[in-house]
Length: 461
Image 1 (cartoon, rainbow, N blue to C red):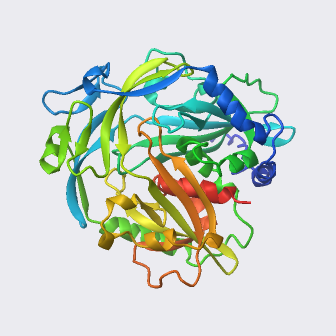
Image 2 (image 1 turned 30 degrees about the horizontal axis):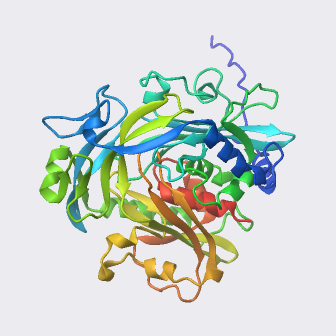
Image 3 (image 1 turned 180 degrees about the vertical axis):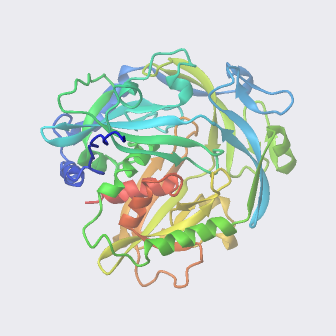
């Protein structure tokens, strides 16, 4: 005889009330637990509460780091954290060699969410990163590499990690692997998480942490160098629940056609990427001095070493390499409504460090100083010359301060008008905002720069 089947309890696929709850949180821009107009003073207080110091040092004085005698790779004596290696790229638009950061371990970028008086709040941290222009910025609740949260640094445990891993983990709102900068990282991914805990759960508030509504965070995204890159990429994971008004099921191009276009871009891009010893980059314009690895023409970026003192971190002092870009970037998103539905213009961007070679990037992403006058990226000059009345967002954000030194870009959102050039190159396509948000449920479709712009777009009133 066949045993009777046990009854199965089905669960809802998604919380139907989550979009309305997040919308309410987004409307709350003044704040109550920590009023928005007090955040700047609170950040200054946290900066003054701990000793922070970052200074450039020669590689020979970077304790724990050394160049391998055979390969020339720059690594840590523990064999963990990350290494600076070489990369050879053979692409349809050129061939080159460059240093690259290889960090194969997957870290956690997690923001804790909790209702306070019926309004979702998010736990952010005033975190010091050695590469940040102002050192201290708002970061996720947990921002840690595997080496950090497994204690390789022999420092204090990562606060609030138990809510994102292990038996005490809260309810998942978002959990997806996403890439980082494909020009400077080799196949680097982080786990982007938003986790909710019950209102009656006891969450002790540590000194360098604060609860903010989504609306407060949106206000802070309009301030230069305030919300760090890791917080921005996690916030973008809320995009599927923050669709703008309008017929969300309609778009200029059906989703299946856009996915076919993207698959075609990935299938036809000719880019062969090979890891090589760092020493071999010297054959194509890179040289290693006592305190910097740089190109002989001074372009793109260099690799330097710093000594760090940070009283609020799990380890109070350390040394490490940082990539130091040349110039301020321009990262722009062109937006336009079609039939009342907001759309964004994205570019299928090939970067050697991406796992799939191509991801959806912003309309424009470059450092203008790196280009000759006759070889400027498409739409760069159109974006830079936009009438101020069409610029909906314009803020300077820094990139990942744990690996990059003073890497800043002007992030801008520009509304298209009749002057937008017709006949865009084939690697550009219009996505509705809900279509783009839907891709954030899946890994390695949308670049970190485009994710930042989506978070900023959702922050607009």
